[in-house]
Image 1 (cartoon, rainbow, N blue to C red):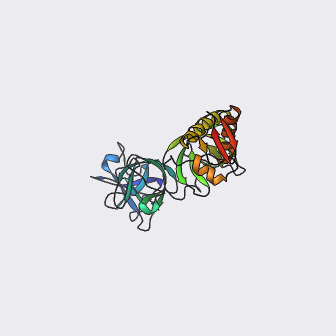
Image 2: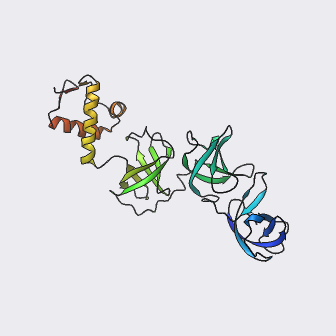
Image 3: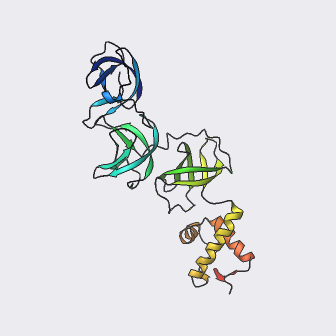
Length: 280
């Protein structure tokens, strides 16, 4: 059977002026697909086998191509958004007809020029489409990364109560925990991260923050600027709730405590009466 969205080796069963017809065997005339003339390898004869990808052309006819897209049915890959229309976005996957990403299959807003991670599926109308959903289950957990390693990942979903989901090397499952501020990120962003934990199931916890002894100085400098913006008096201390600290500073409670501790040791602040004051 000729299968949509898959790479198959098919046999040339008929040559015509505009290409060749392919089938699984020589005598399956009822189940055949056209390979257009410009795609046919030189000196092709009836009976030859050709490896092709099966998709639908602009008129929704099943057609073969020798050009292999970066993803097949059930697979995923990063693709570039070439156009956003009223019915969805269209993605470049190296074929003559762009791949449609319906609005219902988006995870957040996408714009022309974005490169986003998507999977390939067949919709109810028997057409190949892209989806930004269901990627979590497809990503691999078999990486060789270890705690402390540096890596590069692509943001593919914001997990609300869990964190920000990213695909390391566009392949491995990873997450930035929710206590870390990722409000500056968008779907499709490629970022440098550090592995903070390799879980028993192989999934990775990562951070965009630097190693603690380096990050502490950066956090302390940022907190000093924040205190100055409050006219020299921050109306809460490390005893505030994690939610308050996160909302006001963008830091986790532990990072906030380390940064404030650094400023206190440098005698740049005092802590009293539930407030942090800048030392003049």
